[in-house]
Amino acid sequence: MKLEKKIVGSLALVSALSFVGCGGGGSTTSDTSASAISAVEKKEVLTTYADIALANYTDALNDAIALQTAIDNFKVSKSEADFNATKQAWLSARESYGTTEIFRLSNGPVDAEDGWVLSLYGAPEGQMNAWPLDENMIDYTTDAEGNITSGNIIDTAGVFTPSGSEASSVDVTNITKEVLAALNENGGDANVATGYHAIEFLLWGQDQDYDSFVNDTVTNGALVAGERPLTDFTSAVNAERRLDYLDAASDLLVEDLNNTLQAWVSSETNCTTGVGCYRGALLGELTGDDTAKNIAADDALRDIFAGMGVFIKSELANERMAVAVYTPSEEDEHSCFSDNTHRDIATNYQGFVNVLKGVYKESSKGTSFYSKLSDADKSTIDQLITSIDTRVATIDSVAQSDYHFDYQIKNGNVNQQNVKYAHYDMRDLGDMMVDVAATFGITLSEDDVTDSQETDVAK
Image 1: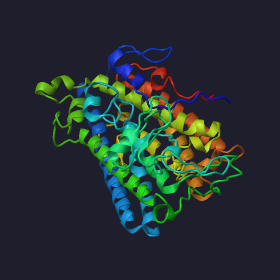
Image 2 (image 1 turned 135 degrees about the vertical axis):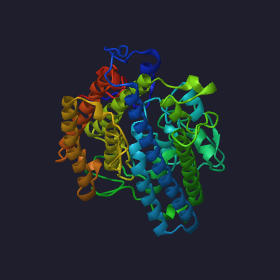
Image 3 (image 1 turned 45 degrees about the vertical axis):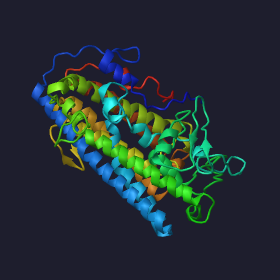
Image 4 (image 1 turned 135 degrees about the horizontal axis):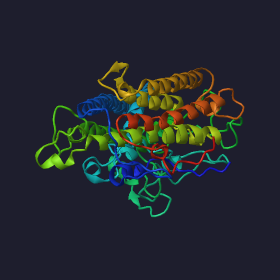
């Protein structure tokens, strides 16, 4: 099967919905129609959305700080115990960040592509969670012939120039967060130098098979992730540079998450510093010189519904699951070094449910989008959620007991079909955002909840 690889990350479609008013395919988005949902009710659901974002990003920041602390401890002790504690801190941090990803693709502060939101918040998503990454740019790997690669950021003294077109050289004599930021996606989307997955690679190392899943030549076993040795951080050449890299990458991650969190703060509104400004705009509460930044409720809802659909349908179901299972290729699983992809799937999906149903950590955060739907739409959505719940729980439990996600996607594995069915259901759930939008008087098409540049994977 020939795949036309395209990593979802563009907000072009959603931006078009907000500022141009057209979709990305054959169907188009029409003007907002009459709605039975009042302005007060729309503000209520948007407030719930903002409150979930605030709670979720607060947890993600706190967990990233815990990861930063674990790295600091490891940098001092260089012990096996602190090495393992750091890996556990990364896994914990992924849990809370995973549910925040539903706030992507909606012209919000994490990845807006233009306008004042981009200017104020800088769209840090690509710096926090870019994926997949070319690990050869960061540190050594074992290539297809069994040779150790070189010529990466870690082993370069002086100036490093990434591969790719229009790459710019960066002095990596000292590995700092500014250096890593300058290298991130420098020369190409796969040249990822920052964020969760760069840290993941440094902690776990390669978990990759160049021959086939059966002949797992780099790491072996259905429940074996990357096995970077402790000596990489103690006695190996460049050990200190690896520690410096972890330190700088975690500092940058905490900084980016904190900046994103500030957008959602409810206790203060300051559009100079950014604190609470996006929340104020989303709820139409900005005044004075900032009044023009207020986002009309229907525009905000349109962006959110389209973003939610694109995320679960094109990003999660298609790029993170279908591409991996139809190839099949562990290179295309999300957390391929730590074999944590099953948790990425579970948390990304849970984030969608959280926002749709107005809950966080199983507690209501207020009036939900779901609560305004017709009984028929609720029934359809509930059927899909029940099915996905079962399939995602199976992926999760099997990954912890029998074989990680990279083995579940192998041809002939008994759970491969379950992964495919989960992908189908998620795509259908993404399409349901068209009906959710209609309830609020907003017309979207299935094209509007699909990234027009998603990887071409036949069902």
